[in-house]
Figure 1 (tube, rainbow, N blue to C red):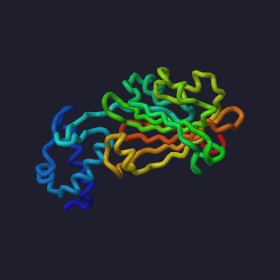
Figure 2: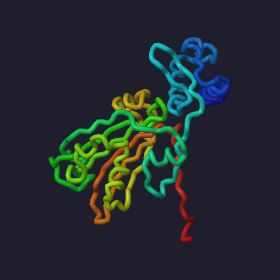
Figure 3: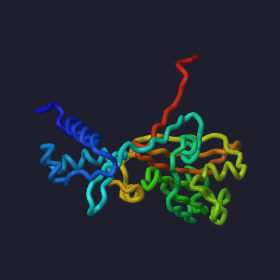
Figure 4: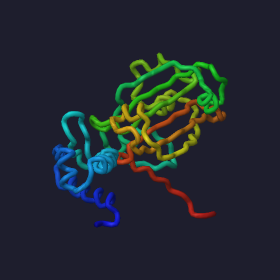
Length: 238
């Protein structure tokens, strides 16, 4: 018996996926569990990891299919750039899915983040970003209505609030972000077509103008297998 049965299962499953061309259908869950000598519950947990990485895709009622190595969006974190800018620079086919624009009022969380009073009108812009037919990120931006109004996005919006504000000439200077690993809630899982509880890379960020005003409070969820973020840092006092 292996000392690390789950890690062994992951290795066996990875080896199986690697032998199959993109578009191939994996054996049914009962057959695959029997082939790999594991329970269906253990197999299902391992397959969730490979789906999050973009290597397989489960389709309700049809089975599980090999996707192949997904396109990777790569960029440094030293300079704030939109996901569309990163994708276009590397030649990847990435674009927004349906966009939801809502007029809401500031609750305690958004009021604190934007440094405004509760109850003030806000604009919330939610959308997925897709690589081909696959949603790979879910982005939500919340802005005061004196910064961005819903009619401004009619027919002009390409999916990036950052790019829109820059093209408009807003004096943006810095963004401060908290980066964590999180588990997909039911709502986020539905938007990304994954399972509830799957691990995601989460950015919670504030965007500032030159005067120090917070103009955008956002939270973004990324499928780990499709992104490679990195940062260059100086060593010590060098």
